[in-house]
Length: 138
Length: 114
Image 1 (cartoon, each protein chain N blue to C red):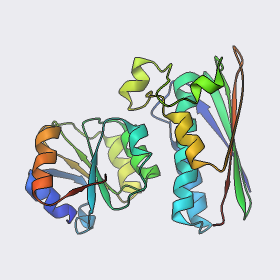
Image 2: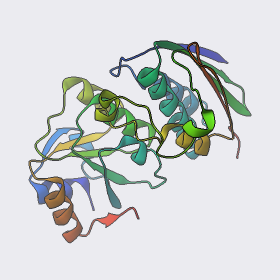
Image 3: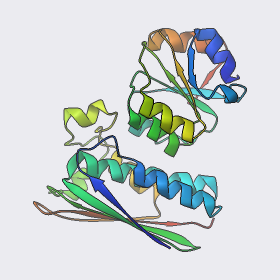
Image 4: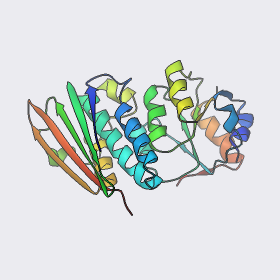
């Protein structure tokens, strides 16, 4: 089962639309609520990251009975130092992002905590791709 | 503690979810930082916040939080209310400060998450 969602950079009113849609699908598939929460928290943080930092992005979701693969691709400034970005508390977020309740340097660490596998690749000046894989069976 | 009691103690306005006021709440978490809210594993909690925007409701949706209490006289927008209603949430508005709100709820028996 595959889904694709577009994400607009800077548009906070729509941030969470993809995570909300994926949550509905996983609930319909009777995935354990604790697993659903892990998946959608990680996806939501990723979606907020695209809105907060990139110009635009897309989210590709591939679900099979055993696992979900989420690929978040954005066109944006990229991440110069991924290890630094993974540190709790490190953030380059704007004042607007902080006013929305984010931008405290917890997004990527929260994503890592809630996924079974997290892979980040980034090119400065081009964009960032984050792949999250989570097992759906306990 | 039932959500109904939280509303009574604080003289809070029920914005939506009146039909769910008998839901039981075990603990409270107060934050204006949504990433902190997204780290919680607890269930049956009320989110107490002074931040009033759509992302607060989206955060609650992802974190399986079914009751949000807005303090400092913050107002829920129609869009927040729509998303909350779609997700069967209760939204409450209260005119007290965060400090006073939490003090009153704790005195009434509401426990912290940690």
